[in-house]
Length: 137
Ligand code: HEC
Image (tube, rainbow, N blue to C red):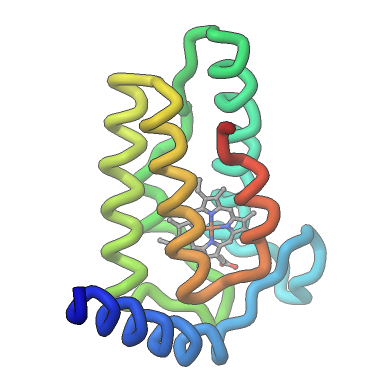
């Protein structure tokens, strides 16, 4: 139990420190340098989540159609970078999307959303409110 609390505290401290430098915008057009590939990719996956969420609620067949590995390939807005934490969350994301496409259910879907939120907490908290709305009740 004690180790668990210690881990939570260290990851919180670490999350606060690493989010200080990287600012993240929520809406289109805020970035004067144009939109990065990653920002566009993120917007795409967010709108596919909207779609898939609706499909699951209607008990329709659901599947993601984006190339999940882009999360490790797309170029990011200046100031963002792929550190070890990012890469770990990104790999988890790729596995989770694969799992969802094999077995599309509420549980596998919400697992993806939780990982979105966790990665964002470490570097890019702006879109978290938007992402939380993607959760299935
Ligand atoms: C591995 C970490 C990571 C994961 C997982 C992740 N994101 Fe992101 N997200 C980022 C980073 C970093 C940016 C900023 C990208 C940039 O500006 O180049 C971003 C940006 C965004 C944006 C803002 C795009 C814009 O308009 O600038 C949205 C919305 C978003 N993510 C939604 C999501 C959703 C929804 C998921 C899960 C389905 C998700 N993200 C998963 C790291 C992540």
